[in-house]
Length: 526
Image (cartoon, rainbow, N blue to C red; front, side, top):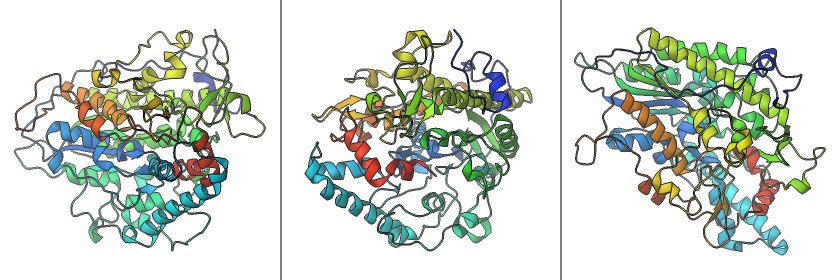
């Protein structure tokens, strides 16, 4: 059966690629190309990561608990967490708007069910929370970013696309932050991701014009004659924001002139494959200048799987992976009105996925070429990982599964939970537990702590394939298989077993909060 067609407005490369089967994820991180490496000594920086929100540790609409981002989880399992440097965000809820803390505050004041007569009070309480966050970051202790005393190892900023990573610097971010206004209605922290970036980029006067890749190159150069590289493993996970806005804003706007210009690219939500390839080629060249023993490149997940854009109605046809429309998860099928509710069509969703397939083919080819040239580069197919966890697209619809598809085996500590975590939007059961979801946080885009743990596990498996050694608390080398301590992550995951109970299976309160505070725009549009 032919899959739903992509719109005529899709770029020619997307329309041509859509006539062929979807990309098959790579299961071999070496892509079948052998590389002989002779490691010498122990690099001083065992792990460095360049990325966006997924690497920054973004969760439930905010960057907050960066100590449990996936690079931090890996550093802990390496036995290197005490030396691992990462940006920190405190205050009443991180940046820009922590939906989990907002909902818990409303639950504390109004219980699990918000009655109609409590709506004015809940609106006031929510505004009060947002005002506290705004004041902290714009006029309070958070307004002055602490200067990092050394280069951090997590070189990631939420919202960054390829051009941001290539061009932005501390000086540019600082210059982009204007004098904030204490707005009584629009209480989102102004220039929030630029403010977040100031805790990632080095602030010393001589370093203020460095990009993320420049900082990585500086770290790579910090090694002596008895060590072959300054960085043992470099992870590069960039490019999701070259397509993510298509689902967070529910608007497909293909890139055009100015796509590679910081001042003009903001109007586009998904990059044409040829534009992505041109930007990515520059990323590859910058990574070539980083002295890292191993480099792990991550493919880009299909953003249309994220539960922030829920498929409406039944699949387009038997065997199709796509629904007729994608809208916000709190909109019931029976209430959806295509003339009124923001949405993307199934054809548009498929066009975005096809574009991402082409992005990932470019990433895969770069790894293959690098290995052919003797570089110890690896591919972690994050796109295939998320596809294997996709509940509504594949798990509950056997007819839609491509020939290569198999379900992802959850770690025992997660599969033993009731219910096991899945990729649906997270909801409470009204009795203190979880009804659905568990892999995505409350913004419907970014993982929960255990979701980040799954990504960390996959990267660690590639690291072991590269010969990276992991050490236990006593300093002894860990035997294979080296696994993430999910019991520890479950203790740290505030959402999985104790989600806010005002998020029931109907998602009514979350829909009300979005209407009242516009949180999905504020937390997901960068």
